[in-house]
Every structure is written in structure tokens, then in C-alpha cells.
Picture 1: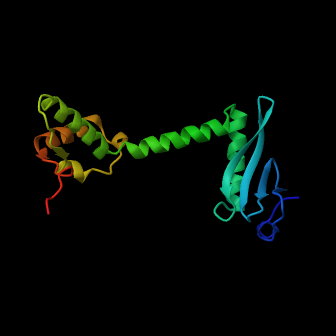
Picture 2: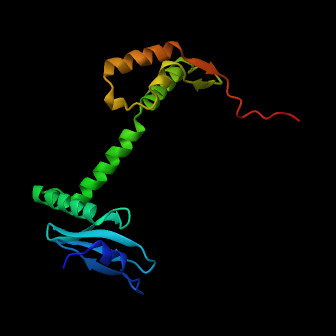
Picture 3: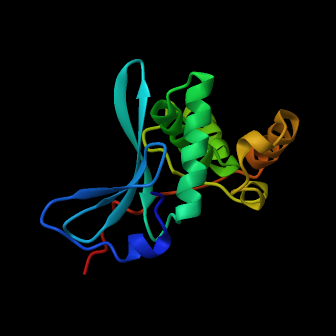
Length: 171
């Protein structure tokens, strides 16, 4: 019998975790602390595995069923859903870390280190001007020519200031 929102909401807490099955491997795991988590069983290569879809109030019954169907499509295509989910997470983290500002600061730091390799104390790098105008832009969404032009402009407007963070004021 398929689950309904009402059945999930009225699920009682017990001493041990228990499962309320929906269909095609989808179930809600009801924990002793009261949390209700969506899980899905699937088989790949003769082994039974489980993948998480999130907590019940956040992930609705409809969303959980859509995720279940997406997982079944991935299995039909021959891909492991858990591995694909992890790859998607890594890609999202990488995209979040490759904003134009971070790429520009790394480039300018390398250029700065190259120019001041012989100096004893290197002043702190301060990026300003055209770089901050596009600082939150994803680097992968910009063409290489546009990025190169911004980097050249930023390199010309590069300012250095001494770092006083290690000095203490005498009282």
C-alpha cells in the first residue's frame, strides 16, 4: 500500500528505527529521535544498496517519488546513482570555488610572487578595480578572451599595501 502524507505525519516514534515502505524501494526511516528520512533501496551488480533523499518535511512525498524515478532511470542506463550523486556534489563544489575573483586572485598572486621573489618581505596583495566588478561570476561562464582582458586590466590596476597584521601597537 502506498504511503500518504497523513500516514507519514502520524508515524509514531518507537524505541528502534523502523521503515514505512512506499513502492519500488522507496521508504521513510522513522528514527527514535523523531526524524523521518527518505531512503531508497536498489540493487546494482547483485548487491543491495541504499541511497538517501533527505528529511521528510524538507523533501515532500512527491519530490521523493520523483527522485526515486530518477534513480530508477539511472539504474536502467547502467550508472550507479550513489556515485553519480557524489560526482554531482563535487562538480557543484568546484563550480562554487571557481568564481572569477578566486581565479584572478590566484593569477595575480602568482604574478606577484614571480616579481618579488628576491624581496625579503612581500606586501599583501590587494585586488581592486575591474576584478571586483565580476567577482562572483562563475569563471566557466566567461569566455577566455574576456577573462584575459579583465586579468590584464586588473594586473595594471594592481595595488600593493604592506601587511601590518603581524605588528602590534606599543601601549
